[in-house]
Length: 116
Image (cartoon, rainbow, N blue to C red):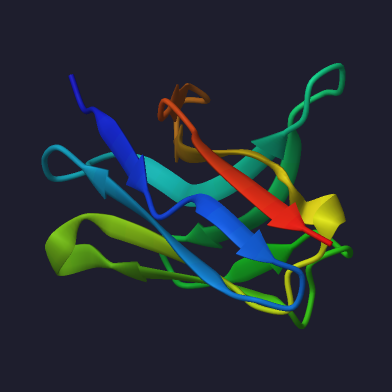
């Protein structure tokens, strides 16, 4: 069973940057995409960014131009570089693996708090 471990969250002032990392416990087989989602209390989890095995990326409109998703296949790691952070970006950020058969695997989440 693959496990995902996120890191890099924390408290930052508005306009600052953070880089989230998500490491898979072993080689990832059968996935079509990796991604980051976020959730605030009382709201549904929402997509932030995804990257396919071919390197195609997709971003939520709210983060385009500020966030960059990337992956290092050799390290089984996906990153989310977050720049120009806003208080509205505060949330728990979850790493996701999406498998070709439709299953999803989630990390435990990492808190990002942006102060104004």
